[in-house]
Length: 126
Image (cartoon, rainbow, N blue to C red; front, top):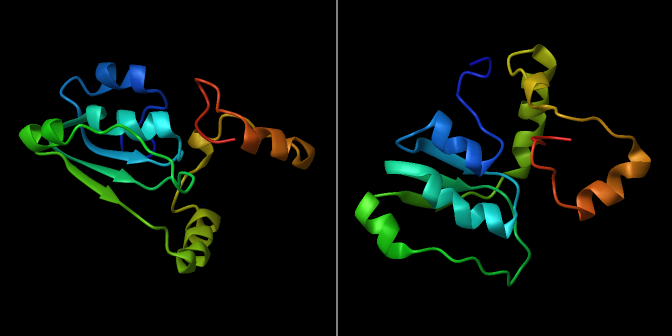
């Protein structure tokens, strides 16, 4: 696609796009429900990377036996704070096209409510 990869915003859309499961699943929301769903979206031998940050002490159900028999690689990734400058440079240069990911723009006054709420079913990035 436009982004160099096929992407879906909702888990229920994933089976239509990836009937055998995805090769790579990136969980970036940091929401317990999506962290628990991520391994189920990976195909046999796929990789799941949890990038989103959950609250300290929050637990999510994961079935190790399922990961074992399907050989799904589950990893956690801590975003390096020194990557921000490079990421912004890639966006500014146009090398990375982020516009297709933006589903809604809001004003600064709406930000606290957006951060406290749950994303809508069709929202990718606000």
